[in-house]
Image (cartoon, rainbow, N blue to C red; front, side, top):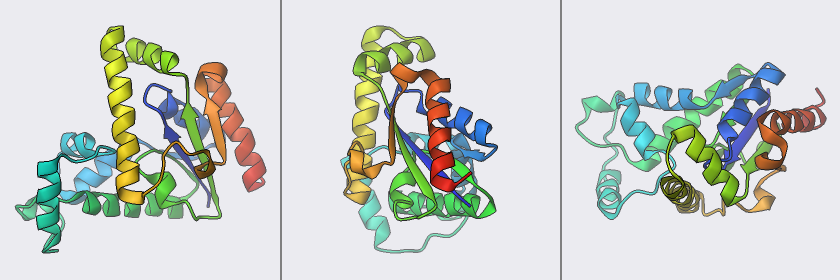
Amino acid sequence: MAIITVSRLYGSGGSEVAAVTAKLLGWSLLDNAVVDAVAARMGLSVAEVRDREERVPSLVERLTSAMAMGSQEWVAPMAAAAKRPTDEQLIEVTRHIIEEAIAAGSVVVVGRGAQEMQAEREDSLHVFCYAPRKALIARTMKREGVGAEEAARLVDNTNKERDQWVRLHWERDRRALDNYDLSVNTSRLGIEGSAQLIVSAAKIRFGL
């Protein structure tokens, strides 16, 4: 089995690139399905998991998490225990879901710490999708139907939170090139072109 992780800057179209890549290779895709699976296993709403993924917790949330970690009395579903799960617990469940997917067949995984979780795997290809800030804003304006100012806020804030989330949990620089086998400028190649480049790299990497 093999895994391609796709880390991405918000607004780069990385999720779309991953979807096309999976389709071209005939592999499974793990993107929003991870959120659904984590929510189901932990007895949480999809909205709560989505709101917390790849986002650094506030001070109040960190204090609550620290208190919860003092007593590991959490069971599935989490709704059965009147405690809010910690980020560490969410990450551990996410890790299990990703590893189960890999065991079932080759898979393309989008974000959610997959690159950091699977960094040492030999059967992996780690990809980073990026684009100039101007292109990130333009894509966000089109996708979200918002003006330039709101799109810029979304791009800057979301990417900052994702950077901080990876640094907090893995002490890694999410944008460091040495974390990846391939970095793709989606504004130059487009969604299809970026996916085709990744497929070509996967064929070389995995001998497909």
